[in-house]
Length: 247
Image (cartoon, rainbow, N blue to C red; front, side, top):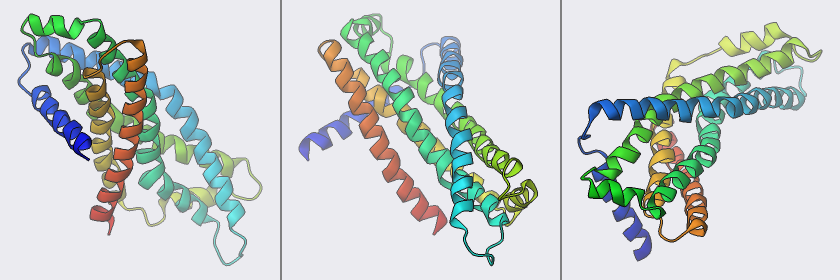
């Protein structure tokens, strides 16, 4: 328990350093653009494949689960839309990004720590925490919500492909279900919690990488810890936000 409190305290102390005024706004802006390209473009391929096929699978499973003629087929489109907007796109995709982005961030910063590059920045009077971590967090807060919207679109599009080329569901029924009882608040809710997830995905791995000590083996351990703790934190925050915003 004391060890956990120790790490929580160090984490918030590091965040205090991260959000101090940058030494060079021009360099800071360039770093944000580079991180946006790295975090966003580097993840689109994986998210595209997962979202498309997951949308198709959810649609097929929903069609297979409807065994009563009293249940209209347009509920398939409704179920797919709700699944992706409320949970699959914001939460599952962020868990996947926590593994992909989080391990990269932890490894990158951890390598800089053990090769004494961070120490060199400190000697030159640079706030290494702000210089290395703040652009990653800012870039994630911008790019990850966009990735989640992209995932929502591909998920429902994957379901539409099933409806268009399946004999058990028509594209018209599916599209009607997509529009039926649509609430804009659900999209706002999904994007709101995505901002929390984006912060978690970048800040926790940065913490583990920044305080890495030792050699290559410790970098691997830090990467593993960052993914595990990020994923657990995302699930806990997801429950809390859902409890507060939807009930």
